[in-house]
Length: 310
Image 1 (tube, rainbow, N blue to C red):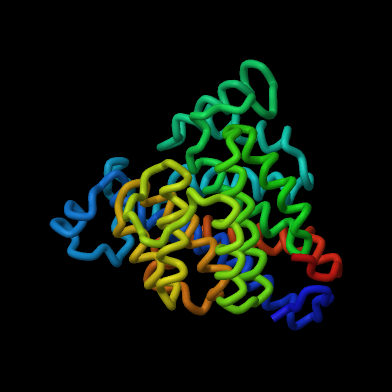
Image 2: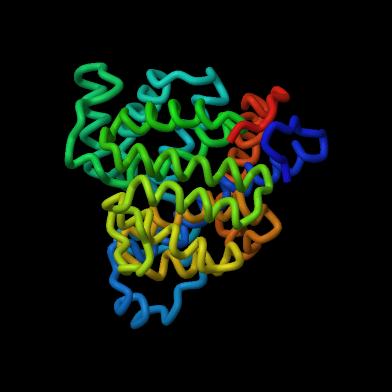
């Protein structure tokens, strides 16, 4: 564990790099696992799969096993931008636009609207919109968390700025920052109790995120998404158990899976990622995730020797 105020030793930084890799890889695995049952109810999942435990593709998008969706693709746009040019919301928006023009297999309505606004008007943020409380900004924040390791205030600024390219709503902002902070804590080896306290602090400030008692909703509304992710992350004790429980909730399962996978990947590390899942992903995707995660850690304040500031 890297305590607050401590500079990373070479061994500690190596562990952070491994956890950063597991963060991006865990998110892609959650996306690929959950996409199969996106928009399904729990009863529909039980009727077809019993419990979905394997990456099998299919679903409403008719994906190949291991194929990923907009959750991973938009995260990669951000990761590539950060690795290539550092922090540049305009470069991220350009990459979103190029991706969007390539006819992706899936893109959420709020993301579609925000990217179209950028293409047509060149603006990097729209005004506050009550309809922007979806999960499309939160699903792609993991690369920002890795690039800001050791600096919580920098995370807050960048997480919100990337979010506002498509989503401008306080609940979306809060979700982006909380996910990023949990990834920071996981990557620096903090114990579960500290992550739980962080969640409790944020829930106290944003009561809609309260997940006890758990309502069992997993829609694209960022409140439902966060309740599902937080409930299953804090009530399970392994990466696989967390992801299986999360995606079998149904609903927006690729996104809840992607977010839970990022947090759980950072916390549990790569050794807990099921090899039979990893083998389903394309080798080129695995290579790029490993390469980008390393670059992001190197570019981060932690990678430059800055003490941990939570």
